[in-house]
Image 1 (cartoon, rainbow, N blue to C red):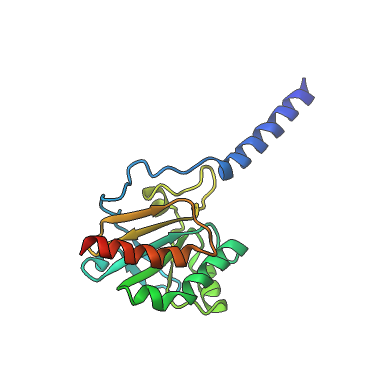
Image 2: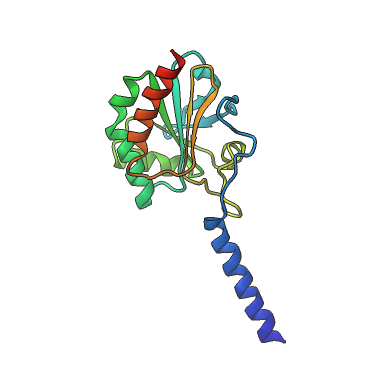
Length: 181
């Protein structure tokens, strides 16, 4: 009986661990055309960044990622760094959001010479509000949101390729801005 109980616990642990990576996160309440959930988070330099302060100041790109310093997250951050001029030329600003601590974001930001802010959502409340928090784990899934100057969500991408996200965002910003003019 004890061996069966131990095997069951091991299988349950494996199932729960794997499900955190395979179960989809759902932003059931968030759809394009709805207001973006407001937040204020610390950036890598300790300053507070408020989404509300972006109202009327251009487009906002929020990209959620699991963990600073991992291969996919590094690829994505460096792609945004390299495409920053294309995106800012379209009156948009980029913010990377993860559940990492500020000190970890600061090291990641400096190491890769990033030219945009990384935000610390340590308690995962913003990740939850956007529907991207992984089940069980205190990490965000890799999703990207494009928010217009009125703080309305215009695009949600839940199928993000870290290497191509920045290029997709630049193209989508052009398309969205053309559609609103």
